[in-house]
Amino acid sequence: MQARQPGESVVETETELIRQALEKSLDYPRYRELVASQARSGRTSGPVQSESLIHYTLLNHQRMNRWEKKIELPSPLREELRSLSEPITWLVLTESWCGDAAPVLPVMAAFSRAGKNLELRIAFRDENLPLMDRFLTGGSRAIPKLLEVRPGDYSVRASWGPRPAEPMRMADAHKARYGTLSPEFRESLQRWYNQDRGRAIIGELASLLGLE
Image 1 (cartoon, rainbow, N blue to C red):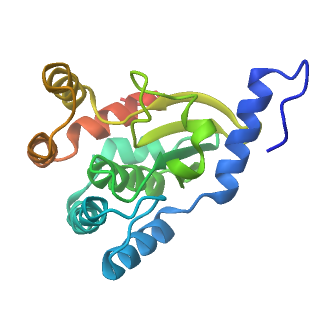
Image 2: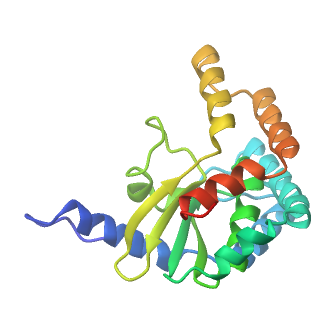
Image 3: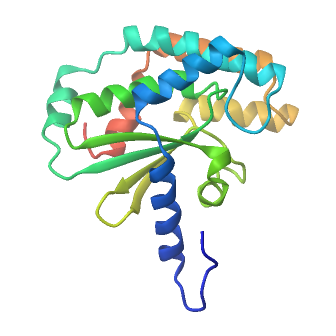
């Protein structure tokens, strides 16, 4: 990216970051192929190839397989998605080791399949840190982070993430007490997602689009 010039607006800089991220992004099938390949070869995305991150990538691949089989959008919502008239791009910043992405991305993919004017693109956070740093959550680079982008001018209309409101409250309370999210707490988050069956994610993403 070129250096920011005197007088260049923040909006212009953000627009360029969005454009660059979209150029490097993957659609959902290609992202899943990549994660499956990483799971088979014992690798993960990002610059750190630690045992724990590789382990989470394998877990996420298995979890996404299960989520893809059980996610079904309500029929009225599918009708509303089919009727979207304005093209919208959902650009998601994530990494293949991200536990919250395992239940969230399959739901987003279901939205995209139902909405003819809704495109899902996935980019890696650590390849797009200047953009990530414009959409922090509580000062951290929490993922997955969804940016709702207007394709015509690359402007960001809204953002969402890294997780629905209830698990966000759970995570904030745990972090306030212990300073970090423990592996045991991360497992409890996955249990919450399983019990909720995607309802909270579906509801919040529908609200993001202005749908009921």
